[in-house]
Amino acid sequence: MCGIIGYAGSSQAAPILTDGLARLEYRGYDSAGIAVLGPQGQPQVYKASGKLPKLRAAVGNGSPMGRVGLGHTRWATHGSPTDYNAHPHADCRSEVVVVHNGIVENYVELKRELMGLGHEFTSDTDSECIPHLIESYLDQELSLEESVRQTAARIRGANAVVAVSQRDPDRMVAFRLGNAGGIVVGYGEDEMLLASDLPALLPHTRDIVYLAPGQVASITQEGAVYTLLDGSPVDNTVSRVAYDALSAARGKFKHFMLKEIHDQPEAVTDALRGRVSFDGLTVNLEDFPYSDDEVRRIERVVLVGMGTSLHAAMTGRFWLESFARVPAEADNSSEFRYRDPVVDSNTLVVSVCQSGETADTLAAMEEAARKGAKQVTLCNYPSTQTTRVADSTVLIRSGIEISVAGTKTFTSSLISLYLLGLFLGMKRGTLERRRVEDAVRELAHLPAMIGSLLENREQYEALAQKYARRSSFLYMGRGVNFPLAMEGALKLKEVSYIHAEGYQAGEMKHGPISLIDENMPVVVLIPRDRLYEKMLSNVNEVKARGGVVVAVATEGDDELASRVDDVIYVPAASGEVTPVLMAVPMQLLAYYIAVRRGCDVDQPRNLAKSVTVE
Ligand code: G6P
Image (cartoon, rainbow, N blue to C red):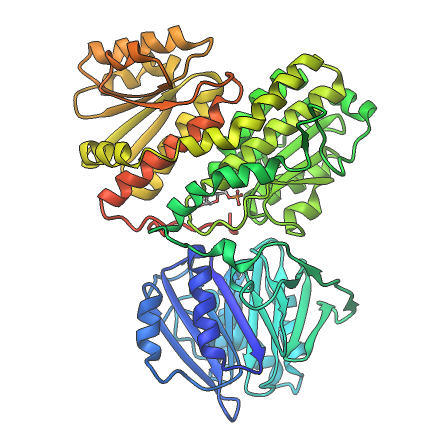
C-alpha cells in the first residue's frame, strides 16, 4: 500500500524525505509527493504522478529548505493517479498538510459536511477530508495534537495518517486506526522520523516504536509523546531492530528481485539458526507457548495467508499432516474470515504473513482469536500487528525484501513451516527419532543446494529468449509440489504480465488439456519422488498433443530430458524438502523472462508489497 515518511530534525528534510520514499516505493508507485515546512512554517508542497524521478524533477535542484516535513508514495484506491490526487493533501488555507494510507470509509458524509461548512476540495480522494477536518478543529483554537486526535475519532476504517501544520511548525502528529499498515517511529540523533516501514528508517536509526492501532504520536526533534484518541497517555518502549541498512541495498545486482533470490542460501541459514541442532540432530522453536499436552490435544490445523504466503501455507499443510499427523488445511485469509469458520481452542491457526500487516490475514487472525483458537504466526518483522494478535511468532528471518514479488520471504516461510511441522511432530510423538535425524541432516545441506541452483544464469537467459514472447503458460505439479506450480505461475504473471495458471497435474485431463498446443509452454514440476510415474504420464499426455514441456526435474534424470523440450535440474533431495528447491527455478524463470520483456521487475504495475486494505 502507500508509503509514508516524516522527518523532524536538525538536517534539511527534503533529501531525507525523497530518499525515504525511494526505499518505500515498493509499497506503491502511482504518484508521489513531499511537503516541507518553510522558514515561517508554511508548507511547501511538491507532487507528481508516476514514479519518483518525476517527483524529483518537480522538486528541481534547489530543494525546499526546512527541517520538518513529510512524504508519500501512493497506491491509488480513491481517485486516479494524477498530480492533483497525489499526496500530501492540504486544507483550504494550505496551512495543514497530510499524508494518508488506508480508506476513509465515511469520507462521502465527511466531505458533504465539510463542503456545507464552506471547505473547498481539489482532489477526488477520500484522503482530502482529513486536512479539512483538522483545519476545522484548529479553527476552534485546539492544538494541532488535539485537532488530529479529534479528527481521528471522526474517521471510520483502517487508516494511517501523518499531519504537519504552519500553526505548530516543529511538530508532526501521526495516528493509526485499525490495520491499515504500520507507522514506525524512529529515534535518531538530533532527529526523529516516522515511516510506514523499516527500510526508510534504517539509514538513520535502528531504535524504533511501532504505533499500535488507536494510538497517536506527537513528534518533534526532541522525541515523541504517545496517547490514545481520548488523550490518555501510552507508554511505548523503544526497541532496537537487528537489521542493518546494508541488507536492504541492491549491491552488484541489477534488480532487488535477483539480489533477493541470491540472498536465499543465507536467509535459509538464518531461519535454521538456533532452531536446528546439527549436533543433537533435533529441532527446537524458541518461546513456543504450548505445553506438550496442549500440542497433543490439537485436533486440527488451519493455515492462512495471501498471495505468495498462501502458497507457503499450502505447502506447509503437507508437512504438518505428514510430520505431526494432524488434519491440516490451508485457506486464503480473505475467504476464511468471511465464512464463519469452525475453529475452537483445539484448533491451531498458523498464519503466514511476512509483512505482519496484510489486512485480510490480520482480519482472519482476529476472527480466529475471537473463536478462541490457538495461534502461531510466521512473520519477517517482530512487533508488527500480526505478532500482537498471535500467541507466538516464528520469525522467518529473511532480512528486508524490497522487490514487490516475494522470493526469499517465500523460502524462509517454507523453512519455518517445515521446522514447525517437525517440532510439532516431535511434541506429539508422531515422528520417529530416525526421521527427525534424517530431516535435520538434510537441512544442513539445504543452503548449499539452494546455492547450486543460482549458478545457471545462461540457461535461464536462453529459456527466456525462447519463451518470453509466449502469451500464456501452464504450471503443473502434484502433492507437495502443487503449491509450487501455483507460485511459479504467480511469479510469472506478477513480474512479466504473461498469463499463467498453476494446476494440479491430475486435474489437467478435466479441462486445461484443451488448451495444449505448440504455443503454450507447460512447466512441469517432476522430481524423482513417489509421484514421478504419474507426472511422467502427464508429460506424455502433453507431448502427445503437440505441447511444449519445460520440466523441472531431479539432477541425473537424463531419460526425461529426451522426452521434453527443456529441463531445469534441481539437486536430489527427499520428497519432503524438494518444494523448497523447486522455488528457486520458479523465481529465476519468471525473473529472466520479465527482464527479457523489458518489464519493471521490482515494481510491477498495479501491485504493492503489502496490501493493507481489503
Ligand atoms: C501482496 C504482495 C505479495 C504477498 C502478499 C501477502 O499481494 O504483492 O507478494 O505475497 O501481499 O503478503 P504478506 O505480507 O501477508 O506475506
